Image 1 (tube, rainbow, N blue to C red):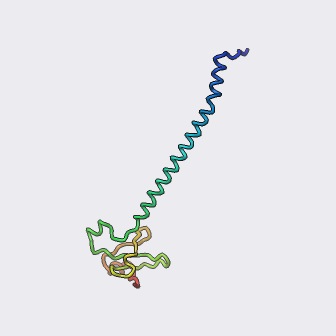
Image 2 (cartoon, rainbow, N blue to C red):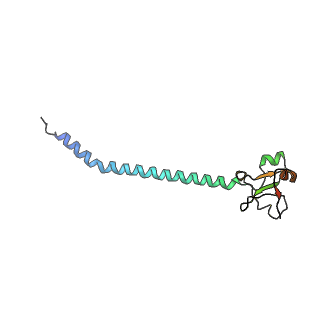
Image 3 (tube, rainbow, N blue to C red):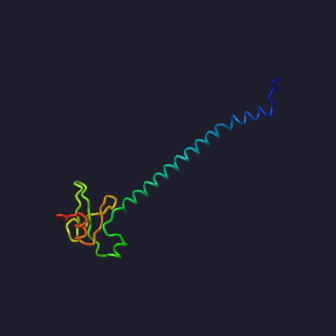
Length: 125
C-alpha cells in the first residue's frame, strides 16, 4: 500500500529540483577552478625548468673550482656537428662564446696537459 506524498515531501522535492541548477553551476565552477589551477601549476613548472636550463651551461668555472683551483680555465667543449672534443684556452677566438654543459660531457681543465691526457685536442682558433 502506497501512501500519498505529504505536502512537506512535495515541497522538499520541489526544493531539490529548484536547487539542481545551482548545484550543477557550483560543480562546473569547481571543475573550471581545478583546470585553471592545473594550468597555472604547469606554467609555473615550465618557467622553473626554463630558468634552470638557462643557468645549466656556464661561461666560467664553478665557484668551488675557481676558489680551490683558480687556474682551471680551459674549456673542454664537444662539437655539436661532429662530436669532436676540443679545448679552448683563454684568449682564443671562440673562448668567450663557448659554454660548458656537463650533461653533454663537456668539462673544465686546469692545464692543456690534463685536457690532452683525457683525449681532447686544441681548438683550431
